[in-house]
Length: 489
Ligand SMILES: Nc1ncnc2c1ncn2[C@@H]1O[C@H](COP(=O)(O)OP(=O)(O)OP(=O)(O)O)[C@@H](O)[C@H]1O
Ligand SMILES: O=P(O)(O)OC[C@H]1O[C@H](OP(=O)(O)OP(=O)(O)O)[C@H](O)[C@@H]1O
Ligand SMILES: O=C(O)c1cccnc1
Image (cartoon, rainbow, N blue to C red; front, side, top):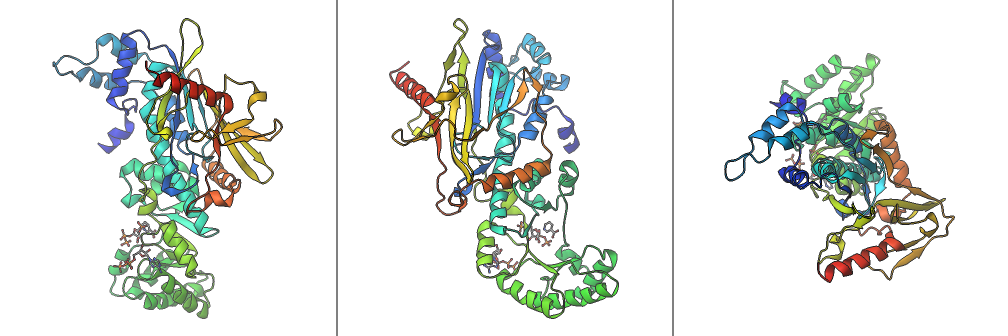
């Protein structure tokens, strides 16, 4: 069963309503209307000041492999409406059988620091195709961006310490485990305990041993000695099964034996009790015994808040094993990214008809347009991001940013201000034109991006809000459209 799931085409990995809308477009002859959708989120997760974009590599893979298999069509053929008749007519299934994506896709590269309301992806093409991609793209980008952001926060508190991702056993299913390991590594973890993720994604794998190993022997010392004999080049001993500080003494004894054979005790792991106190005491014992290079690993429901607190208490831990709270994004389990229609090409005039969704809450009013994001910077880092419409403006106009929630807040840049446009071409007419960087390059990008952010944006408590504004022309267009829509249609 599990193998079948992973062998199947993923074109049905979507909500039924995408297929019923697709049928509607096809049946009413509008499936080829050119549309633009933007994928963005409205709020940074974990009460933080930034979000790391992640999941594009999977999205590229998904689009590259898109296509309805005979088995997919067979299943769709079996679906019926409430009168018992087929939901989809045969000619539509034939259409799906021959469907090849011809979309253009722009995206923010993985590992980029992003902010609310900025498009992470922009899809342009026949509306039926854009619609079919909504759910899978959100599925892929929301989760990985969430986990990469959590890992980046762990990396910020851990500073130069090692962070190991230990989450597989508590992850949300198989892919929840695999993609969490990938995103956690990209966000800043150093390695994972998840061996399949190591193989699939080229992530370093690391690990210690469990309590069951110790419990399966008559004594803790015997368990340590046996482990060290079997794998003298990879010995990190879990010392808290019975009495932690006695466990440290047993680890030291094992370390002495290892040394006689020309090996070193790599580390000990603490997994319960007061991790600050125990790590300080364990460090003293190890140092006094001549093991200053034996590392202290800690685990046990850790997250960035506990790690920060332990560091503030002077804990002598240099390797942090983080599982559940990382891979399940425990304190905020979803990013909440959305995919909104932003423009449709008017068939008669050929001009764009800008589209937006109204809401009583200003933050939920979508922004129309073929959006691009321009990030202004100086030699110290990032200054502000401007969302603009790529087809609406001459480059010389792209200087004034308006706060989307308070139009009286404006910021002007000189025409010569250095900038970078965040969205890059990924697909053109259905053909991939983007080479995904390798995972290590993406991981390094996260750190250089974070270095460009003011420390206030990175702090965990009441972070400074990084300025993201609408370009003046886009702001005016949006305002006009809101007024028009409110006047009633
Ligand atoms: N000095 C500390 N400061 C802050 N949090 C800590 C400290 N030491 C441990 N913790 C955290 O406290 C939480 C719970 O620890 P608690 O002592 O209740 O469990 P435990 O030690 O695992 O108990 P048990 O022995 O039943 O396994 C964990 O998330 C752990 O990481
Ligand atoms: O606490 P987390 O952040 O989720 O990290 C992973 C946890 O998984 C293991 O515990 P578990 O009790 O499953 O097995 P064990 O017997 O090896 O401790 C490990 O000892 C960690 O405590
Ligand atoms: O290797 C470890 O120490 C490990 C692996 C998974 C979960 N907890 C700990």
